[in-house]
Image (cartoon, rainbow, N blue to C red; front, side):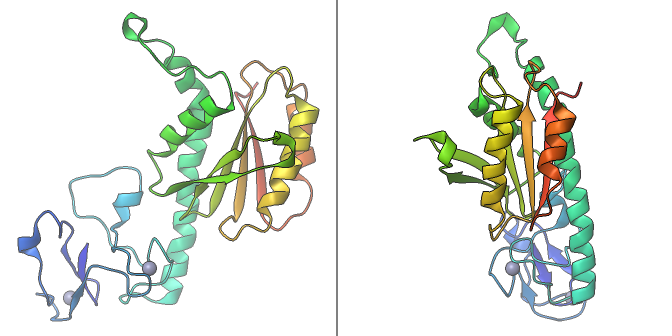
Length: 240
Ligand SMILES: [Zn+2]
Ligand SMILES: [Zn+2]
């Protein structure tokens, strides 16, 4: 978005409609900018990383989506208040994805003329579906690849929601991966993210459609209870 240093919106389509670009604001005369002065990333309107894109002009953010620094037209206080509000709002996307993943997985099995579809058989299938659903809500989703001791030669791939500083880890239960083993693995995974520079909150999503977990409440309690550097949430779905 092209804006002036006082925060007047000049052109939210500066690439596709460059004829509307101005070097100086036609309201206050201040210079215009398209990039954050701190990290050089494009200035985004609010709706770009929120749920719905409408045709109306996006709201102007008070802080940079990339580096978090306040934009020149705002105060540090306003920017941090907005950041906290956005953080809360961002939880909604995660909640919807976690709550609806099982419903979507079931629906995907019903296809016209039995055409090809995604069937959830293992952790990788859950990951792919989760990734697609998260795309509806989040702009910057990155894969965090690492090699935990329990995985032998295979690597784990978790999701980092960069702007939200949230990591989502996905597990799928099976006859060899129930309460005890999944708990042991998650302790290792949780430990790993304690020192991660971009992780403030860790969600461990356990997909358990066949109900292999015998005591969901016990597993959640054991894993969430200890005091840690970062917040840890254990989610077991579908709920019983
Ligand atoms: Zn202006
Ligand atoms: Zn920035």
